[in-house]
Image (cartoon, rainbow, N blue to C red; front, side):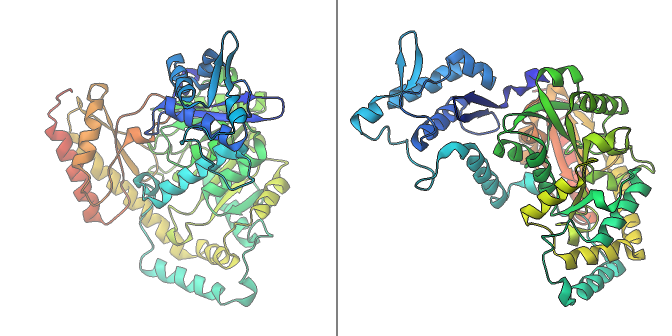
Length: 510
């Protein structure tokens, strides 16, 4: 795990009163040396690095960023050519004095990216926020992979419309609820369902209603971690999680995923200085595998003995393909002390997809509720009350049974269809819950991924390469699509096309 951080790392270069963050990320199109040069150039332009200030040595910066020394040398050479920095014999690299002596503007690529008077010390946070905005607005297929779930139908849809209309007409509910941790009735229903279906014993006072997983994660990160600390993340993983860490100056410690879930190793976590972890143990996204009990036990012992905190995303467990889904980390011994449990309703009640919730660790209930209030971004109370009424109705129970039956049927259909694919090409990932279907290519066939994804680009449901979600650990090559999105005919057409192109490969290695 420690050696897997070579693709995406934050390095902190500490001065007397400032922490400057530089990152080198292989998931970007720009070469690593240009990423480093551009960030240092931006910090010089923004005044974070002042004239005459010393930069880290080549070997030190290369080690901090987990890149080669040649990469750092090329970055410094670029800045030397532009006149941004200067080299002093036996002393190292410094911000060039001539920038102040001549009063001249440095290389044209040095420009102010921030409003006048705003220091660039938050350059990393601003950059990550802009990048995430562009990805979301640009229609990145990865952002929509878990969207488009099977919606409400018939009586279920009528029940939701009736409840939503009823509460929307109530004048006293026409408020955003920003000074509340969520509707009390909804929180009580959530607590009861958690006890019944997930074995989590908690009261309504421990639950905070949020605007979905992103806000739940944002609250937990802001309360529990300090700038520069390391947090374990899964690779592959869906977009957005790593962006939140980078925007807060946190350092992701990437950990691979295998058949037993996230490959957690307590010794590696201890050695890398991890202060926490963000995991999807019941249904890892996008591989949909469950974390082995032995690894859960190791992670909980590590968290309890080291003072680390685990943020658990359990949304996928609601679409379990078995009658008894695996116990979440929060329900295990000591889970209430060191686990922030997060879930939501986007997979089962699409109209309430903007409503999520978290269960705060013991002793931090008021802190999490207050942080949610400070954020000011919570679902309207009318929508929360409508969801509470719908969750207690027979229509919801019928809808949940239908969705779970559909998930099991489509999974069975997939397994039968993929019997035609030679094992020399790869295998359909076995899962216990979730909506995503993954086909993992055999090691000798990894180079086929790009061509196969291109051939399937015109199918009704998006089929995406798995490597696009691998950010730090050894990439997993394969294809993934949402097996519950779209109509039955769209599902069969997409799955059939995937099987056809895989079968046509004929087991040839490339």
